[in-house]
Image 1 (cartoon, one colour):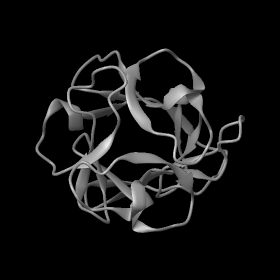
Image 2: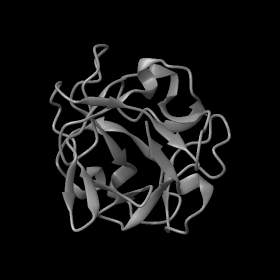
Image 3: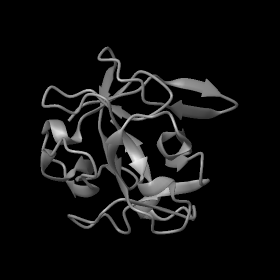
Length: 155
């Protein structure tokens, strides 16, 4: 899976937005400080809508490759991921609301800011969280608390 981003800095924040543009800089989000073997992953590499995003051991597959080319996180992969975005299910704002793939629609549920190692959903003000990053842990939004499950490194 490939996801399109463009990196822009605004008042010390890196804005990450999905535009579905195939020209971008490839990167991998790894969980935790320092060298990590856990990556942000599209479950099973499945390009369908509602597919969960999860923590999974880094394996170099396209399900873990993300690109920067906008202000939202959106998929542009060669296996049908084009036009899919990293989305908070139902536009929810409550803690533990799951994150999934969903057609890009420009809503706040798909708007993310990368700041101080955290991915923050601008609609809810909550962080992308995978608890302790255990294999298969579904990504969700959670009140930002600086935990390892909310710490993301772009490689």
